[in-house]
Length: 270
Ligand SMILES: Nc1ncnc2c1ncn2[C@@H]1O[C@H](COP(=O)(O)OP(=O)(O)OP(=O)(O)O)[C@@H](O)[C@H]1O
Ligand SMILES: [Mg+2]
Image 1 (cartoon, helix red, strand yellow):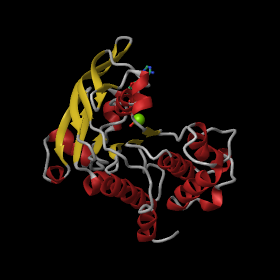
Image 2 (cartoon, protein in one colour):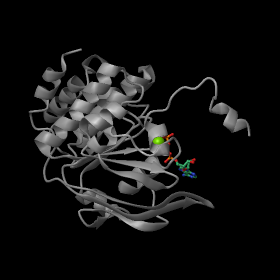
Image 3 (cartoon, protein in one colour):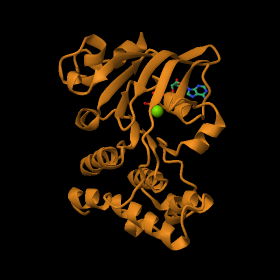
């Protein structure tokens, strides 16, 4: 794998970034039947900012991201992107945004190369030779050149994740949404992904919302962090303030101690 500085250097060639967009989440609530997942969540993401959303499994992080791209509609409240309602299909035509899904969501019938080329071909962003350059550069950034002709079924979980990120890079988005971009990756590749997210912000003012359990990523690159618990934001503030000890449940979430004398699973049996 090339050293990280080679990869960030590659990003210096045009890769997205037109005008940065801001995101406002206002009193967002979402219920599935009688199950209230989000109960009035409010925060905003400034243009060009990296906002990291953390929270326990099942707390509604993926559901919240889907509201930003209009894949879920609010039960109450709203999400706007530069003042445009995220629930309106036309917003997706006006703002270039890419969501890196938790499980990759690659097209299984297409090779890795064709998965990446799909968006620029459909939107006629460049001639085939230009698309090839964009695709190969994105693959190179994610150390995936050798995988261009593979089918998604031939990839490891971590490779699928990297292909999904490469595909999002090819879209040259103003707004990047990542759902667990570093899960399933080894520590060096995780650090590389964090560097890519930070570089997109620095060089192209891409606005990013990153859902992650990865404390290193959150503390290393976030401007601000939100922690979702019980349908509400239990923490909203700077990444640096999170280094200070927090109150009970946030501290337990960030620094859980393995306690064999008093194991947590016993509580599950009650
Ligand atoms: N379409 C749906 N219909 C019904 N329930 C749903 C739907 N989508 C999500 N949920 C429920 O909403 C809750 C939050 O789901 P979500 O996927 O947002 O969790 P998460 O915070 O992303 O968790 P993880 O860290 O495990 O990915 C879960 O209990 C899930 O079962
Ligand atoms: Mg999720």
